[in-house]
Image (cartoon, rainbow, N blue to C red; front, side, top):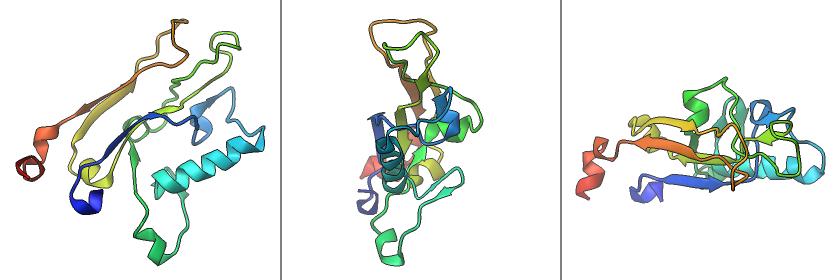
Length: 146
């Protein structure tokens, strides 16, 4: 879509914690599926992700989307969690599973102004916390006029 001129924003619950900062008390590695899902997520969503560089050929690179996790880029070392499983004691196990990911074009144009996880501090009806993002749509006038 970016190749066609779209400013891409992907939002949702991806059920993957990319690195050590995104899992408490530690990154999930038990059940091999967590490791497989993480590798798949990183290779499909990010060409470079805080030190992770996904390897691919020159031809396949054209097909890769290079997303940016806004919260992680704006708060590089901060731990923040969006998922607190109901089967565990509050804050004894949590992960960052929910993301606002923008393409490189809107990121380079500074259209993503700020983002934060709204950590609720207690149980509520959902086992996920909301993530908000401030996107300045008017920053890219060429796209708006299109």
